[in-house]
Length: 74
Ligand code: SF4
Image (cartoon, rainbow, N blue to C red; front, side, top):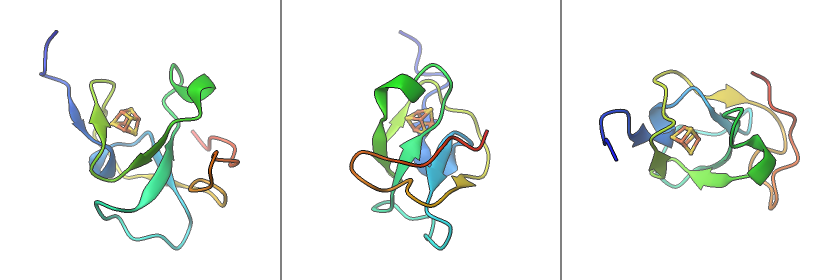
């Protein structure tokens, strides 16, 4: 499998974090990639995958809970 599109959650537009959270390796958030939404993935800033898309994280309250309870904002 190609590693070409692999990237870190902290640099991905599908990462959704709490409104006041800092963009850091250990910050926990929810993956809101459309294909991955059903899995309620909770991922840290230094997690990553090949659905990565460069951008700033979305923000919504409840994104870091276990499991995440925020609605995807994108
Ligand atoms: S798991 Fe993949 S698609 Fe989801 S936020 Fe992280 S890098 Fe982006």
